[in-house]
Length: 247
Image (cartoon, rainbow, N blue to C red):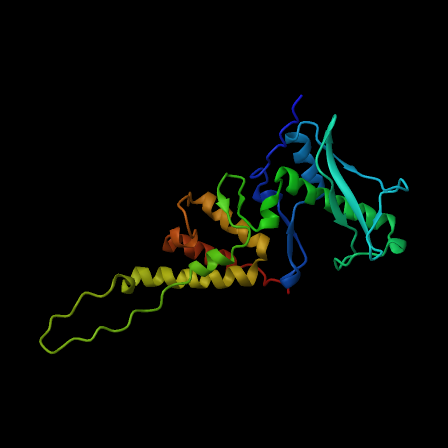
């Protein structure tokens, strides 16, 4: 009997599954372990996580430097994945010496470790580890980190004045100097500033996805550039009314 093919769960998570903890430079996107398990139970046809014991029949394995780690694998009947080591760490991500590991340390690292192993073997939520785009609930792709999109939204500078010789007919102004185009560029710039000042990374993605769904902005590329002046003004007014982002 041939071994089963591991389920491929790439693309299963949606934007609504992604949460964030911390703030500023310490902000981190994640999916709660309970949601990971729910998706595994729904899509993985009996594959369940299991901790491998060491020679003393305990779950904590000892590294050469004395710190501890877990060994996780997924099992389905007579079949199992390779073993996935996962360090037992403190809240600063430092490995903990075996003699100082508590039951809480084991439980917390187990929850994080099974999420890591699920990404490794089934590609579940691999997007967060690889920093790739996550699908919104509507099925529209939205970048996990909105900064690249915001950067490409930067409006072009005003064109330099066109010089002309005496008696020469004036040339038509460049397209970007059209009043409506300048207004849109200014609104985009203001919107970008407000998004970064009022929303954290997860909220930025969710906010952009909400507007894209509401106004059917389904073309590739920047969603802000797909908005008209009225839509951008709605965004500016909405963002302006929000409280500043806490640092």
